[in-house]
Length: 101
Image 1 (cartoon, rainbow, N blue to C red):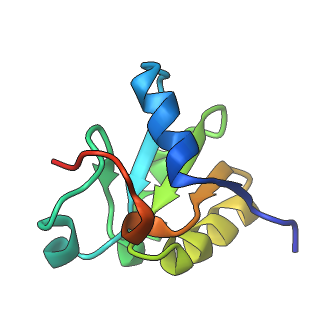
Image 2 (cartoon, rainbow, N blue to C red; image 1 turned 120 degrees about the vertical axis):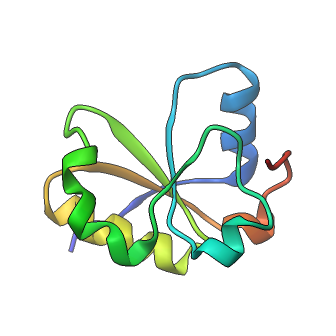
């Protein structure tokens, strides 16, 4: 199995501060997202990823986020096997130093 690319919360925060155009996907459950998510992230629950493959574009890279980076890592493995470019934010929202909405 090919290794998943990662990004640290600090690296992601810096990219967002530099107004870099990123595709962020939060795969947590509704009650978790209600506590705040990274501004600009799209919410698609982990269990709904297979039904939403038409949302993803194989020419773009997606950064996946969850609470601690375990679920988003699983999503990354799944999508990478389907041929998508993915990156997992290590540490998840527990490690996120930036603002939430």
